[in-house]
Length: 143
Image 1 (cartoon, one colour):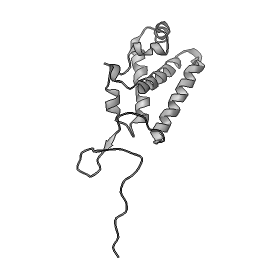
Image 2 (tube, rainbow, N blue to C red; image 1 turned 180 degrees about the horizontal axis):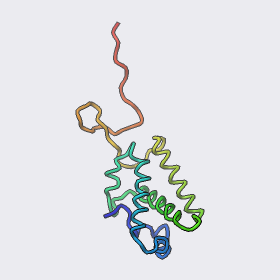
Image 3 (spheres, helix red, strand yellow; image 1 turned 90 degrees about the vertical axis):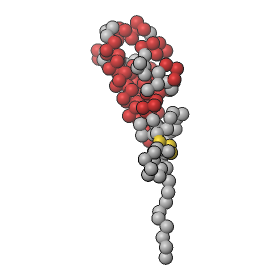
Image 4 (cartoon, rainbow, N blue to C red; image 1 turned 45 degrees about the horizontal axis):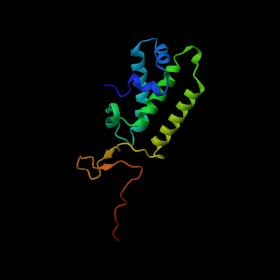
């Protein structure tokens, strides 16, 4: 099952309008959704466990990640229209989403998602959440 379902768009766009935009061809929607997920995934991968996030379905999906993906997908879909007639609210939602994702990617904003883990002691096991901070210090000197 896909991360985004066509029924997920009901909070953003009417079914008839969505069907019209994709020319009743669900393969277009599937492609656009893949592009949107890749966009969001590329902004989150540095700090968050994206495999875990995007493998979830139904009510297990994170609501904000789903919203970000839908906003990006709708922006891409509107770009398919003649003369790129993108409504202001779609453009604003996209900009807001990309601004949030940029801040998350830089590590300036933390969100409640499964953190990416890293190996802290070289034993090959990821045992500590990855953070912006590097732990440790310089080697002790002896005089």
